[in-house]
Length: 197
Image (tube, rainbow, N blue to C red):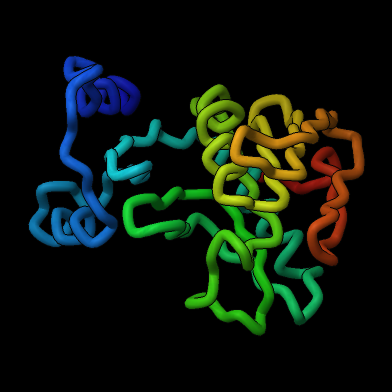
C-alpha cells in the first residue's frame, strides 16, 4: 500500500457538521505514549482536531536540507533556525513547519507566534493546503512572514502583513529570484543556486 493510500485510510469526513471532541497537545502526546497514535505518524493539531499530514516526497526533503545547510552556515549569531519542529501555538493548536527563525535570546522555550520571525513551509503533496488553510492559520496567529515554497518547481509565495482574515501581501517569485526576508536579518537566498542533492 502506498504512503498516500495510508494517509487516506486515516482520514474521514463522515462526521461533517457534527460536534467533535476537542483534543489538546497534551492529549495527543499521551495518545502517542500509549501508541494510539504511532510515533511515526505525522499530524497537526488545529483547533483541537487531529489532522494527518500527507507524506513528504524526495524533492521536499532535498530542498529542506539544502535550505537548512545554507542558513545554518550564514545566520547571524542573534538568530536561530529550527527544522521540522512541533510549533505550539496554543494548547489545542500545533503545526509542523519546515523551518522557523527566532531570536537566539528567546531560546527554544520562548518560541511562539510572537517571537517567530519567519516560517518556511516546503510543499509538494501539500501545496494547496499550505497556500490555503495553513496560511490562514499562520495569519490568524500573527506570524509576520510566511514563505510557501513549491518543492517541485521552486516557485515561492511570500506572505506578509498578517490579519485575522489572512495575509494582506502575497507575492510570487521564481527559482532565479532573490528571496529577501524582511522580518529579521536572515540572509537572502536564491533557490536555483542551492545544491539540491
